[in-house]
Length: 207
Ligand SMILES: [Zn+2]
Image (cartoon, rainbow, N blue to C red; front, side):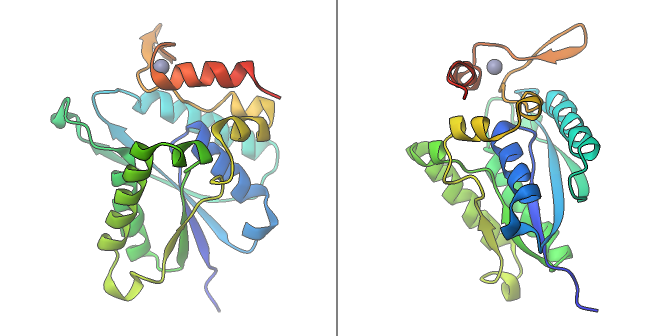
């Protein structure tokens, strides 16, 4: 039996990666690939892990109830809160983990990441993305190093366009705030961080 070729989707529960997962589940160009979705619980000073977990569970419930195709889901935990204010970007951890998952399962051909057109307009985001990509290649075993690649299912879309593309009841389930506040044991968006401000603009302009 020929083993099914797969796409690995690194899923944070945020809007960009929800856009990626949605396109992987709905676009014909990805239909021949099996789907493996992985989430990293990244524990850092921003304290987003709980909010992201809840968002992920809510989006999976949505996909299940609406009868979208099946996928394998795995998760892992990584606590780097010891670094305190010294911040390391999510893209680096995700790149390292993706390469390790491929090392374990070489039927994964591509890693789908949530880079948007808006990200590509920022020099800082571009640098982080490139560095993540280098970590990905450096971590792969030599025989796979130039044979496995990143794909960018929402790279042609701005963040606004990702929001507009998604069904209204699905996009509300994504999590975007960088620094959630906990009230009544529920994480809520802070309303102040750059991502919250960006989301407010996006909601105002939604189609
Ligand atoms: Zn916020």
